[in-house]
Length: 613
Ligand code: BES
Ligand code: ZN
Image 1 (tube, rainbow, N blue to C red):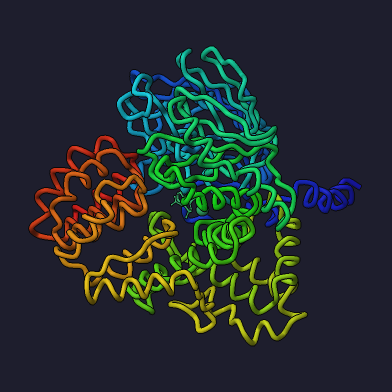
Image 2 (image 1 turned 45 degrees about the vertical axis):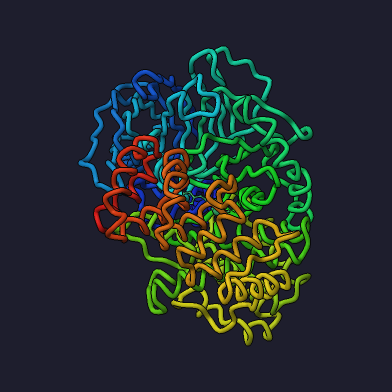
């Protein structure tokens, strides 16, 4: 009798918890020590005090777990955390903090039983925790208060929270943050901008998210709303400019919703950070973190906001299961970004952006080599820092794959497919293999012609650029190319009436290989590029200045490197200058001064440049 009952219960036990692929827990993630297939974290409650004098977060986290397989150990990811004590269901236990791996950090092994519900960890972060950057007042726009921000993607969440640091699982969370009274704390969840924290802030994320989307920022912040669900957070002295720059935000959200369904995260705000933020933007749920270097005054670099907004669907709602599947996050997002840009600013504008990116992609593949395994969309990053796989390929090869499919399927059919894909996988994770199967079952089988035009396996599992790479044409750029040819031939200064940032970028990139010192003088005399406040143009100009030894730009370049910490700009500048024997001693000195102002992810990359890696 007993055994019959037991047998009858098995199917219920199996389906009730759904411990299988649906939650992604059965997928092996080479970048996490955690064992979510056995015991999974479903919710966490965080309680942290931000101590600016010691540069530490100190407090505890309660992890609510579900023990799926009667596991005896909960394995968590940590990186340089000081673990004070661990309790299981409120009773102290002996834990093991394993030796640290340079990339993955240390496994924290905690003994559990079948009845374990809550695991409490008292801990503090180290002053050089990789996710955190503690800024001095001088590094902020206001220059009066210090600032703290986190950057958890890809595997840095473990340096400020002990957790299952894998994108394969999702959890809900709450947090209490204690900070100096004069500062405001902000986290990646819906929040009331009017909350007067008086040093104590509470947060609640009711929707499940992966660990890399945990984010916190503390500083002298103010808020200005566009409407009841979107607005800007920034330091008070930056707020007006930022608000003006991103005023198309409500239109962007409306366009995104028209394309692929209702905005799922309740609220969408942008937080403008100080310039040391190592990325352009980070899609933290409900509040995108953004670099101030996209604020130009003419709204010409706002595609970055469209990008982070698009992640609300591709990435945050349907999430790459492992970092090998990163293209599912970024390739889809660049594609979606481009559709939003086209909807708002028109096809000619989007064509310029698409062509600039495709040229960069071709250049990247040429440098990496056609047969380089890292030019595949589906990567094998085992044993490596996931950061190594996060270049142009996932973004741009991924995007052009989807564009090729769109062209072959026709826009209406393709859009219906994508909308359904997002709907059916809401709050789930996705592997490359699962997507390829879904694509086949839901699009390709009914439309065999698409398969003839686009070889899916070649795109996903092959190296280099497939023959079905979409051809991008831009009539605006045709004019720029004529002007560039004339300049190369006779140093004729182009007529730039009605040029946008993108025209200038295309011009500079086209003339770059032919530039000489004299030509640099001619351009700078006319356009004053050395003084330009537009970071994208300034970057291209500084690359030319290094190549031509155009000394008049060196001081401006040094200032740029001392204020901006955005890795996409500073890493190539350092790399180019360090490769030039005459400039190397100078750039090393510049780096010594600038290095303490950079976030750890930028420092890691640039240290490697100087170590010759
Ligand atoms: N999610 C990325 C940023 C990221 C990627 C952080 C990998 C850590 C590891 C974000 O959405 C992004 O792609 N940002 C880009 C801007 C975008 C317009 C291409 C950036 O920061 O440059
Ligand atoms: Zn992105």
